[in-house]
Amino acid sequence: MPNPKRRHSQQRGAKRRTHYKAEAETWTIDATTGESHLRHRAHWVEGKLYYRGKVVIDKTPVIEGETNL
Image (tube, rainbow, N blue to C red; front, side, top):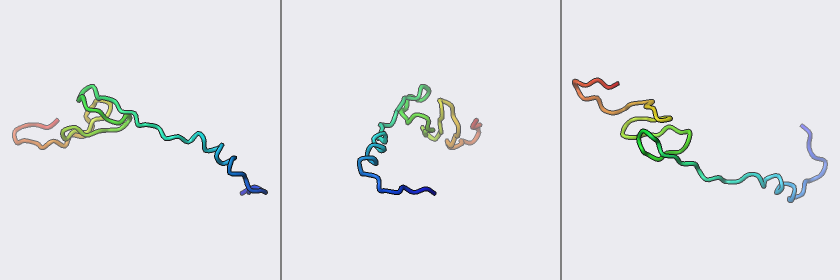
């Protein structure tokens, strides 16, 4: 791999790193549950995993005589 012939200054490294900024996380409110969650992430509400307003996994306890769809 090529290596620099001379040492780069600290200023050059600082100029390159100026674009690395911390950003605040984007929160949104789910239309179906009304819960706030991180965007583009699945979230648990009362034993159900929701993603984009749809149930992905349902882990609520099954009561005898009922079907859990």
